[in-house]
Length: 370
Ligand SMILES: Cc1cc2nc3c(=O)[nH]c(=O)nc-3n(C[C@H](O)[C@H](O)[C@H](O)COP(=O)(O)OP(=O)(O)OC[C@H]3O[C@@H](n4cnc5c(N)ncnc54)[C@H](O)[C@@H]3O)c2cc1C
Image (cartoon, rainbow, N blue to C red):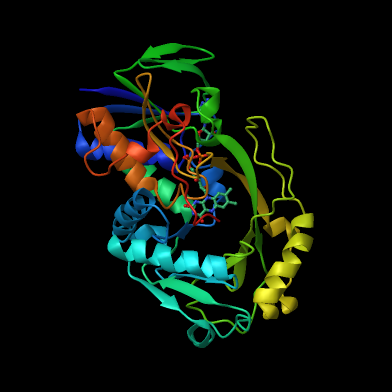
């Protein structure tokens, strides 16, 4: 009966626990989480977007596996209303076309749209300057916290234990050390999000991202997809009767330390959001924001915008998911469980995600990043 200790009780850690027990019901699994309960890190602060529209085969594969899994999880509020990417830049339009070819080769049902088609499909967008769009109908969004809870409940009903409120201070291939004790394991998994680099030598950095929620807003269909303006990163989706809006605000100070607390929402975000958002979605001029319903959180960012899944000095890690950790959580859990229990991952070719790629300076960069 393998004993496995997991550091990190976010969506990735609990997905690992679920998938370990799915593959080996006799496994003895414990999840260590420094906060009082699961999903309080980046997981609870995500927008819940799920898409297969990526630019590298591995990210497409992780999404496709995960989308199929989400389709079997009714409790998570998965709404497959699609993702619509648009651009007014010739270079990005060209890139969107070549990326769509790659996606189609890998089985993604993606459709390229010209300006007339975008304006018919999404009449609420200002489209006079748009050159191209891409829409994949199986993409969508869900409740991120519900996904974490689903994995946690499943794993706990299979016998997994949670040690909440316990910070892990050091690890090696077979040991987890907390402030109070040290325990031995057949395998240790680190799924500590942006704090992974405190335990493992990996270039994973915290990066602040913010989301704003509008008050109820009229004039938009209920079946609105996730819409992304690739030129500015302004993106939005329905949340209740309002809109949940994101925007990669590069002018924010990015913390250099491994802060463990969620960053505070910066109200200046709303000022910086105004220009790109009003340009693309003019009816936002009617929208009202309440800064108390806006929030910030950390991406665990890697230099190539790909996660790290694999073994490093005998420790397995699944971390560095940037803005994709919710949508890739089923695949990440499955991959980690196979590495631990079978010695290698058979479902995915994880070579591009191996932890040693940074030292080897052998990176493939994801271009469809928000
Ligand atoms: C604003 C925003 C929007 C986002 N939107 C999306 C989206 O639309 N779609 C998507 O897929 N993803 C999105 N993400 C990214 C997503 O939230 C993350 O990729 C995902 O939550 C990562 O999960 P995780 O389990 O790796 O990390 P976390 O949820 O951060 O979990 C890691 C856990 O490890 C714990 N931990 C760390 N160190 C230790 C230690 N030493 N000892 C014990 N416990 C420890 C932490 O307390 C934390 O709970 C978004 C993120 C943000 C901030």
